[in-house]
Image (cartoon, rainbow, N blue to C red; front, side, top):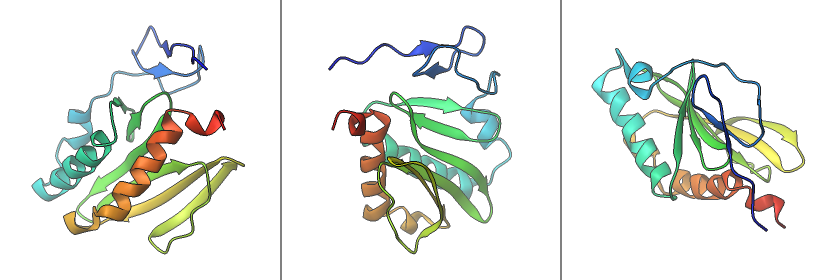
Amino acid sequence: MTQPDLWQCPKCGRYFVSKNHPHSCGKYTVEDFLSGKSAEAVALFARFEALVRGCGPVLIAPAKTRVGFQVRMIFAAVNHLSERGLDAHVVLARRLENPRFRRIESLAPNSHVHHFRIQSLDDLDDEVAAWLREAYAVGEQKHLEE
């Protein structure tokens, strides 16, 4: 089944699955998000981004308060970056119980947002990489084809 092209907001240039998708329209950049952050925090972001890019081609979707990673839809995001670490989430088609998740928001039967914190580069391990690969398939909307 062929999926329709993504719609691009004519004002901010972000891509969405649906036309005229509501969003905080603005010109945001990863550089703005990283501005003023410590070298350690930037290294956490860079490693997270590398793990995301290891899943396949992605669009980077910076917003006012976060940086999203998108295939068709956003499947992962860095929500906050500070001296305490990197707060992120992945969207999975299933609810995955794991003590590393700080909270899980169930938005729909096949859409569960799993929030977690990364405090060191060692925390960006094979388990996180596996979550990202699973979330990437959700970003491709493969879970809707089943």
